[in-house]
Amino acid sequence: VKQDPLGVRPRIAAALCLLDRGDWHQALSIYRELRESDVNDPRVKALSVILGHDADTEDIEVSLVLEKGKSLRRWLDDAPVNPVAGLATKGGIDEAINANVMIVSHEAVRRGMTPRYSPSLFMRIVQFILLPMIYVVIGIGLDSIYGPAEGAVAAMTLFVLQFGLHRFNRQQRKQIQHRDQRSLVEYAKMMKRFKVKPNRENIPVGTHLLLSGLLVTVNGVVLDIGLPGWMTERLPKDSDKTIRSRLKRNALSISKNRPGKLSILSSGWWLKRPKEEDGDMPALERLIGPVAYRGRQTMVQKKTTTLNRSTSIGPSKTPVSELNLSRRNVPTHTIASERSTYSGPRRPGQRRK
Image 1: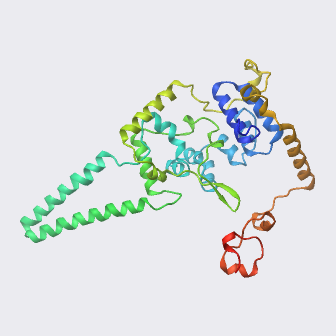
Image 2: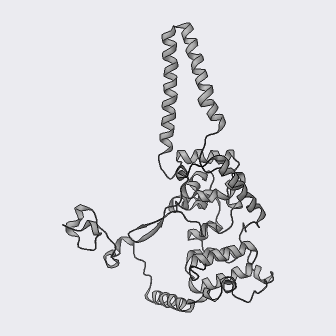
Image 3: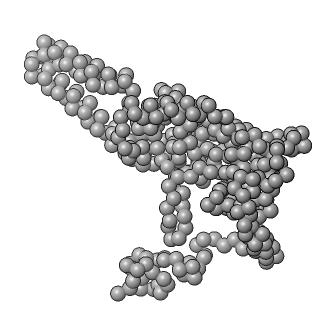
């Protein structure tokens, strides 16, 4: 908040933290300031719903707060990097950790589950001890019936088939896809073994307004590509003992802290709940000082002037395919076959020769 006191996301984060602490009126004061400057921001609308106001469910931010069940399935494809939609639908754990694996971090820390995938001990015993013993017994049985050559060939064939199937399953786990990815389905089974059960009932309300993954820039546009669970293969290979001791310390600190707010507030609570101490002072001024409002009036005036101008002219939504990107100095048509007919801005290494 100190780095960007006028930003919408930092202010929403401050409001949600105050809500978790029990300072509801302070969080409400931040929302009223956001409503004054960014009334059309979907994140502000979602914050209003969390604080007991009404809003339409057209935007994903509001829909993930209010709706439940099958009505949220549409967001699995429309918003593939938002994990809350996967948690809210039945059997969507693998889609949730494919969108952003950090959504299960709090439950994983409490249960002491290490982030790197590992098969169960039972599967290892079956694969590397029980099955080889069965193959040897089958080979000995065929040896006594048909002869040593047939028994040896049968045993070797079974060993080769097991090795090939193991390699095939490993290769399947490396195929990246949004739905039903093999590696993340097995990761979800590992979570079930450790009794890690993330759902909307144990996640602080409004988490989807703050959670983001890897940010990349494409033609000047910042895109969130999430933080898929298969990237845990890239983690440093620390020993499990070191990781578990670290998780134990973090779980202890989580248990000592006050739990977050898990549900939205009821309408009209501000009429019944008394204000906190220093409730008349703006929340951000009390937290970080007058710097929180430096330049705010100019920003609000500029935004409201632009909003009034756009509403007086009419709707100005233009499909992205019809935008003139050359006026924004965005490189387009960088394919070699299109260079002969294009004269707009280009990347430095792709100029026409």
